[in-house]
Structures are given as C-alpha cells and as structure tokens.
Image (cartoon, rainbow, N blue to C red):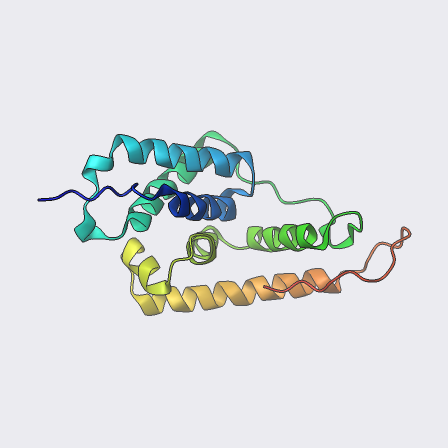
Length: 177
C-alpha cells in the first residue's frame, strides 16, 4: 500500500490551521503556539495518517483541536476584550473590524466558538465539520445558523453603542460579518 504524505504541501494547511487557532485563541502568540504544536505532533505521527479517514486538513484540525485544548488547560481562557474598539479612531478600519468581530466571537459559548472556528477559520463545510465531530450535517448547519445570528446581534449591539465624544469625527465604518 502506498502511503500518502499528509504534509506534502504544508503552506495552505498551515494557513488554515493558524486561522482555526486564531478564531479559538485570538490572533497572535497563542495561535502561533497552537499551530506550531499541531505541526510538531503531525510530523511526529505522520505515519499514522489514514487517507481513508479523511483529508489531511481534517486530520490536522483534529490535532489542532487538542493543541488548543492543551493551551486552555495551561493558560487562563481568553479575557474579554476591554478596549473600546468601536471608538478607536487611530486604528486602521480593518483592525477595528477585526477586533470587533473577535470581541463578538468571545460572546459565544464554547461549542459555538468551535463551530465558527472550524467553519470560518479552517474554511470547512458544514458536512466536513459534521464528519469531524461525528454529528449530522443538519445539526451543524442549525448550530452555525444560530451562532451567526448571535454574532450578528452582538455586532449590531456594538454599532449602536454611543461613540466617545473625545474629539472623534464621524466616519466610523459599519462592521458586518
């Protein structure tokens, strides 16, 4: 039997694993640590990869989920973002949008954050997520729809918050997902 190297083309896999970890842990050092740990484990156990059980990304995301859980066990969970990201006029609009979305994601329960990370961070379909989690596709689709609705409500609530009066000019951009 010919073995397939799951890490033959690592660049797109690294980006998807990092994006997943960033959704779960926040963009930065923790996501980088989880990504590094994922690929270290994958290299060590690449001989165990079984193509019949799924694509390399599914295998890697299974490893990444454990790496993220391990980081949660050794470090405190992500603290709520306390900065008023809606009124930061000195930041680029893209950074404000990113921080605002990250803050909204933190309002979700753990399962919803996991589903959002798999869907939008790792760019998996609902069917792929369902296979990975051993659930029905419809169950995942409904849970994603509800998480998306909660995110939208959190983002709309963020937009309605009063803006600080400290010399800000209008022109803050609306944030949407």
